[in-house]
Length: 261
Image (cartoon, rainbow, N blue to C red):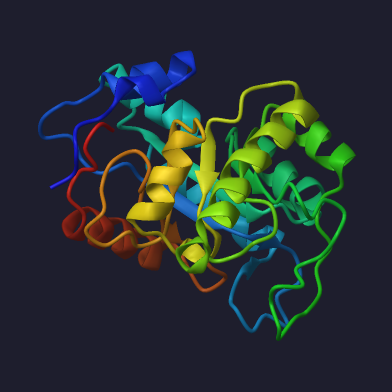
C-alpha cells in the first residue's frame, strides 16, 4: 500500500491541491506518452508518430468529449473534484520536432501538453538510443519558446540515465539539478518529472519527491503508487481509434487509483 501523501513535499500551489486531493472511487488519471513527431520510416524503438497520425489521434479525443492538457492542469482539476474530461498529454525527451510538428497539431485541436526535457542535453541529440536514428533535441531557446506558448516544461533528468541503476549522488543530481536548471531557463516552476526509460523504484521516487517535484510520470510503476509514480499509456503510429479505445479501457481496468491523485 502506498504511504500517505506528505504535503510538505509539494512546494507550489497546484501541488498543494494535489496533496489534499485524496478522494474515494476516483479513476486512475489518463496520461498519454508520446516522444517524437515526424518521419517514422526508420523507427526501431517505435517512439515516433507522424504529424498526420497525431492530428487524427487528437481529433479522436475531441470527438469523445475529451481534451488533452498538461499533466499539471489535469492533476489540479482532479484535486478540485473534476478532470473527468481531461487527458494528460506528455512528450518525452524534448525533440526539436515538438515545435515544428507537434505544437501545430496541439493548437489545431485545442489541446495542451507537458514536455519533459533533458536539461543536460539541450541542443544535443538522442545518443542514448544505440540503434538511432539521430534526432535533434530542443535548444535552450526552443525550450523557452515552448514555455512561452503555454507548454508545461517538466524534467526528464539531466542526461537520460536509468535512475534505478544509479548511485545516490547521480540520482540526486539528475533530479535536483535538472529542476534548478530548467526553472532558471524558463523563469517558471517545474512541477513534473519523467523517469528515463520509465524505470522507477522506491529510491528514485524518494529522490524525485525530495527534489521538490509535485508529481512524476513512469510507464508501468508496478506496485508503486501515488503522484510520484503515475502510469502512462504509450501512444504510437499504429494506434488508430479502436486501439486507443482498447488501451484506455485496459488502462482503467488494470490500474488502481494512485493515492493522492
